[in-house]
Image (cartoon, rainbow, N blue to C red; front, side, top):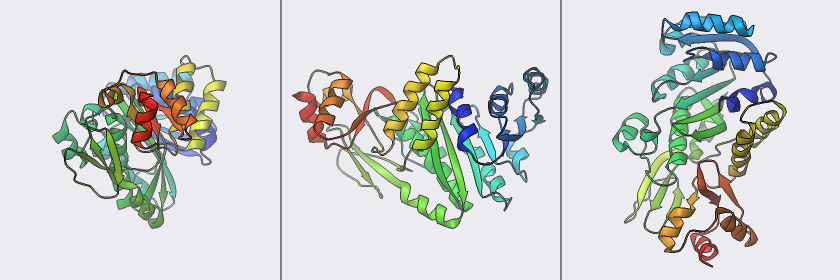
Length: 336
């Protein structure tokens, strides 16, 4: 799925980028960024704390004909005082300890008005609530261990990036967000300015979820209700920039990626997720709540759309869909 983050930067970003891959390992991802987007990547720095990485990275740079520098260092130590405009964070486990130091490095250079941060979390069990206390400790949010937990996890990750950015007078805009197998990934644009940071705070809120009735409510403040669970604080804004993801889809169609059909499917669903609620419904769980036989996902989508309620698939689950239809309308369409 690395093609998702590599493909679009050549057309979406207007500026030349000084790119740093903070956990580069073999260097392949950073090399792909530079090789597939030579007109955009002005400088490439590949950082890894492992002393054995240098030989492999230097060899891969040479094989691919890409200019770049390898630095053996811990990214938190390295990035202090540096002035990269695009930083990739992909550690083993939580990315939380690395987010603020990187954003601080953007802040330290007043000439940087726009920066980009790509963050991968490989601790979905924490963000999805299987390890509830760990999520509260690391991410300062209450997770929801339920059918739409992966979307909640992404939104918890984003609210933590937002908080860190706001402290340095940056606002964030998610360009795309992905949950796939064992990891979650977000790519955000940061805009310097107190106005952007202040506007971002309007995107913070909570989900109140009643598992017995499958009732979900969105609020700016936590709402305590009997039998309900509270998730958040989390990011309630968009997960994707429609134009950015559309360009990703165009590039995927043009390039000869091995898994281009699968990528196109994901990207199409992401575009559909724009302007939809910050949660989704699962057809299997609805069948249990409604005490009804499961129905095909496409059937419920068709019925809701016929009733005038837009409904779309979601990349978070093969059984999931998003809609703003009231729960009673969903029930009627499901059980008719």
